[in-house]
View 1 (cartoon, rainbow, N blue to C red):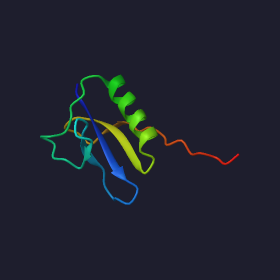
View 2: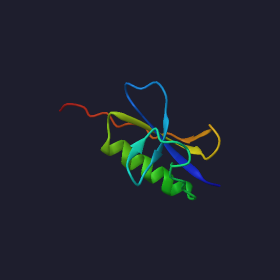
View 3: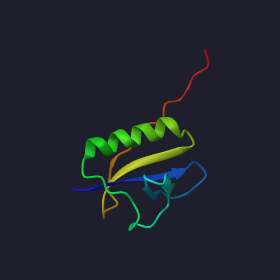
View 4: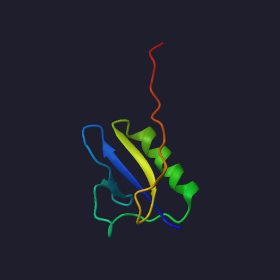
Length: 79
C-alpha cells in the first residue's frame, strides 16, 4: 500500500498533496510523492511538523481520503 503526505498552511482551508522532492504543497496527484512504507511516511511528517510550525501535515492512503496519521505540533512554552 502506498501513502502520501498532505500539508496545509495555518491560513489555508484544505490540505494539498505534497511533492517532497521540491518541497511543494498543493501539487496535482500525478506529481505527489508516493511512499510505500508507513513508518517512513510518519517520520517525514514528524520532521516536517518540527521544521515548519506554520503548517499541518497528514499521512493518507494514496488514492483515498482516509487519514492514517497526523502528527501533533509541539507548542513551545515560555520558561
